[in-house]
Length: 178
Ligand code: HEM
Image 1 (spheres, rainbow, N blue to C red):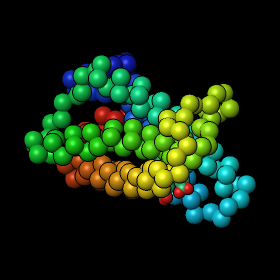
Image 2 (cartoon, rainbow, N blue to C red; image 1 turned 90 degrees about the vertical axis):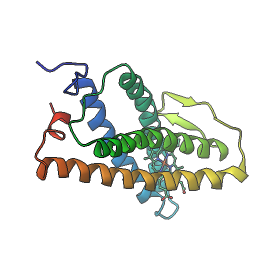
Image 3 (tube, rainbow, N blue to C red; image 1 turned 135 degrees about the horizontal axis):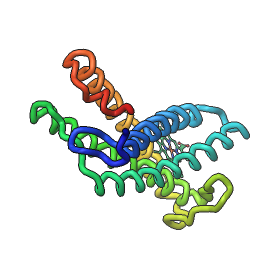
């Protein structure tokens, strides 16, 4: 039977669910973000901005829960050369930096624009800083370049997983499935 928690050799159900849910959510947010900024100003564009902000805040809440789960669990051992393990752990650490920094800069950008960040109409998040026009541009740029960094990290991560599956023929990709 599938374990909820990780073991020395396998990821548990909760880690696997976090991995795939967040992968889908982050890729969807990247695609939506890149698409919506290129649209001409319209009701449709504003509606997409609203969705992007709400789902982006959900990503922030999920990464907080995921980090708590990660530190309270053991990480399955990587049976690969030390330099490959170091590269893998560096990319995994970078993912956590991106997963926190991107929604936080989005929230800062929206707060500095004096706009609210609603959570699916249930409540409104408090502003992180007061309205500040000088800072909007800085947060916008940082949000955008962190987004590009996340895309690069995803490409590296997927290429490495496919190399392990198809070239090395080990079970590194398989153990992220049930
Ligand atoms: C992990 C979550 C998120 C990801 C991956 C993400 C990604 C992106 C990307 C790739 C863009 C397009 C940047 C460009 O090409 O100019 C973008 C734009 C934007 N994001 Fe996010 N975002 C996330 C969360 C958030 C959050 C939580 C907010 C606000 C609460 C937010 C607010 C915005 C806004 C307002 C824009 C448009 C900026 C502009 O008009 O230039 N994002 N996002």
